[in-house]
Image 1: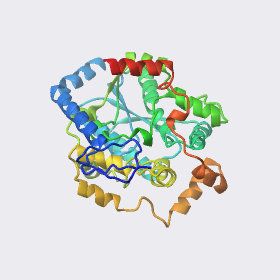
Image 2: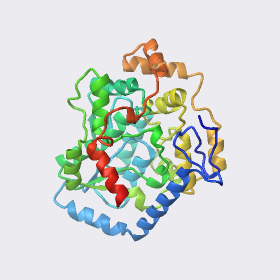
Image 3: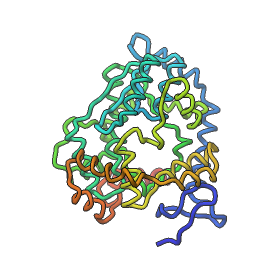
Image 4: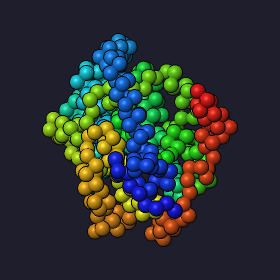
Length: 364
């Protein structure tokens, strides 16, 4: 056990078991993120956004759409839709319904599609398959239980792009606001061997319709599709983006990052901190500190707010158990099961080829 310590630059602390501090009390996340953000900003200066947009339009001639873009209803993906519309691109928004949408997220997506006149394709997951995969991850006792949702985004976009013969898939990623990502808090998002292995061990229903990338299918689609993180090439400030969405498009805030999903809100505010001791607000806020969008003092004030409402948490647990088709005793057993990590299960990262690629990257 490490003696508790918090970074003097951001708000990351020793709840991340891998964190390191220099003699001045600045953490390894800050140092890595500062270099990463500096590289991103340098790349953005050299990137000709308008030329790239014109090429997207040129490549889209004769097709119904210039690009596909994922939308969850959150601030990042909604802002992307608005920016692409302003840039004159013909966009197909792709939403994956995994059964956990809040009423507010449904409202925000519908409102935005109407105002921006954007076509929406909704990929509805087979609920029993997806529930079984999520339950398998809960049984695995790793802190990676949001991976079943995170993993399917790119495959779903790739399938939509392939169907409509679109060359570009736009993601709502802004690396400056997501530069602090502790490995111990979640890892293996695109590792199908890891996901499949956990499901094989703990799942009960075959994954027949669930979209995924193997190593080979990922290589195949990376050759056909150009993935574009447009938010990395514009001046993106998350708080200003929220204000613009609310003022121009009637978008309504959820009160937290990725809270457009009940599962994500419940997992990040209750399961993750109660079982593992991880508060993801720390990494989200630290990313904003490093990018200069908030101060450390503002982040500390944010962290002083309770993660969840004591009055409603029992109701949330009851709803969660009912939807996952488990009893309260089984839920309590999952919460109290011995902790595991990504490295306790098979994965691409830790197989022969994964270890070989690590050695090659270190040598370069």
